[in-house]
Image (tube, rainbow, N blue to C red; front, side, top):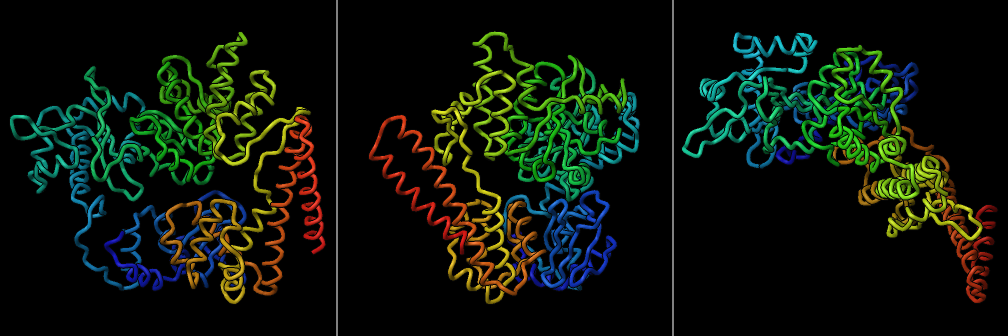
Length: 585
């Protein structure tokens, strides 16, 4: 939103007290200097939603949601950034400046107007005589009028210029409709409607703006599904169908059901599975996977039961696993999908399918022949190649153990194969001469908490924050998220948490900042806390180096390298002495 000056955004944010805004929407209670409430973003019985009036932020210690007054309005009221800003400006009597210039998918882009017009036209057509057959088809598939209205489902009538004529009446010319992907230019001149005789599914952003459409053909017309082309407001690789409707349920359960088609989403939501989304006519992309990860820790991949569906489910699962998402793959018999299961067997049958779903390792093993040693080897290499893309070392370690167990292959061999595929990702797991599996070089929990403690001291502000930034380098933060936030904090003279939350792009970093700000350490004893945190981090690093030396000593003993053994033993002795000093301190 570069076209609205930062100082105006700050004025609007400062003019709206976060406690007042939130208490207009949910019930809050005073709790010391802060306020508490049942979190509106996930289901809970005891209040863990914390509002800090001094910092003008909120943070839920249950689901991790956090931010300032603008982000709260965006998440709770399902508004875009600009719409939330407008509402807060109106509330405070502040006039937003007129905007001009700029490029890209601006909130007031006329393409949105064209899509809005088309959505109304398609919806009206479904409920008029031209849509009689389409409406009967949808009702025959068990879709209720309430569901059709909730998702804005419509119908593009037969004919070549129905939408063009509608646009002319509403002041939307053919050039604008073409920019929106709604009409196609003829080689001979003029345009014709892109969507004809199709059931229309509007593709709606979380803020309620229509960015495009998916059209399902009536009868045997090809292609069966036709989607809007890429436009400046619609990027199919980023869009998840049903996300707007599923966000609250996903955030509450931290689970999602990923399906293939629009009808699957409608059917699941209608039957009570309101955490269902679809990849909108494309193979699951990295951007779509990241969107899912924002709301869900576990994803049930429930694609069609045919060969194409199984292949697509495998690709989707791999993409999600790479991000550390827990994946369960739901299997259906040939010719069945979530929609058909619900229509023919009911919600209980689908719940049973979800309950008997397989994690990715077991799923891929079940789909691959493993009768011979050669087949088991091929499957193992296939699975290890998937695990090699997983960034979280703990998740990867657990998956490797699962691969070894599922295929009855020695874990040491699986670990070595994994290490060979990931030579550049820091230290690797290795198996020594004794066959013992060495520990993965994961940041110790104590060290991670110490890094967060240092950040919390800086977020708390005051003299302690100044001393920490003067005496502690950002290089001490080995956790990537902590390092990123540290560089941001160390680069600011004064930490205005609420303002900083508006500029942070990654939800993980914003969540960490709101967590630290919601529960800052006691200002008393700040210097002592700083020294304790630094000492804890150094102890962790020393222990890690000692483990490295122990592994190197094993190797040196095997190769009879006496000089190397002596050097390593001396270094280990020095490190052990330093570890004792740190413990005594």
